[in-house]
Length: 270
Ligand SMILES: NC(=O)c1ccc[n+]([C@@H]2O[C@H](COP(=O)([O-])OP(=O)(O)OC[C@H]3O[C@@H](n4cnc5c(N)ncnc54)[C@H](O)[C@@H]3O)[C@@H](O)[C@H]2O)c1
Image (cartoon, rainbow, N blue to C red; front, side):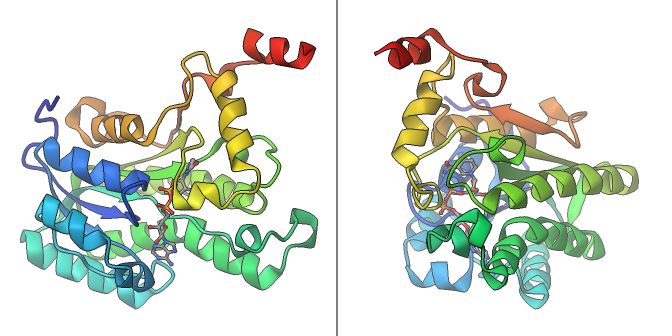
């Protein structure tokens, strides 16, 4: 069901890779709610070609951008402003990658070249995007920026590796830039800490299926899926949440505040 929550709003969605991607669902949902969007992903992801399907469905241009590259980000904002004839009202940062995770290198043996690359892509990119957006004056007053995080920013999860550090910094950047952009232009910046979700990035984490099952049993409402995450993102892009900023918002069926559940106790007793 659509509520026209984003009627007249314009936005940039980073990170839709395939139909499983959280960003893919957010793009579809934002357009259903009346938004016009620009889709962006790294050039290597664009070469896979799947994004064209979504672009057609959403009637959205695709602008390639490696978020570790300042020139790419500047080009994205220049072209986006040309396309819309002005700034945007929302941005989704749905980007993450760790080479240490991909190569199954344990945390205590991390390769620092890989660590730097993962940090640049997964955390610093939010700062780069916001800094460039400010320079280009690319976000309208009362705009909303969202990035996706995970509870490993606060607590240890095996296999999440250096992505845990990246998410901690990502949340910190949202908080600090949220202040700066709030006072200068009333732009809000938040992170959503999402349940484990079956996507390309998610499945890269060792033992991911076990993760998902455990989180499902540890959440009174069960795990939140990608479609439900898209619903939540849309509310945070809308004018109904104008005073929410600098927050890390858990979207996890209650997992983050549950000590233990009866389902887990029963399982342990077996
Ligand atoms: N899947 C989960 O369990 C889960 C849980 C909580 C948070 N998240 C977060 O959600 C976000 C989206 O991930 P997803 O699960 O939809 O997986 P996904 O693999 O579909 O999306 C990750 C995206 O990052 C993009 N990317 C990687 N390097 C890039 C670069 N240099 N420049 C631009 N884009 C780049 C990829 O092309 C891809 O589109 C990530 O931040 C992820 O950490 C995922």
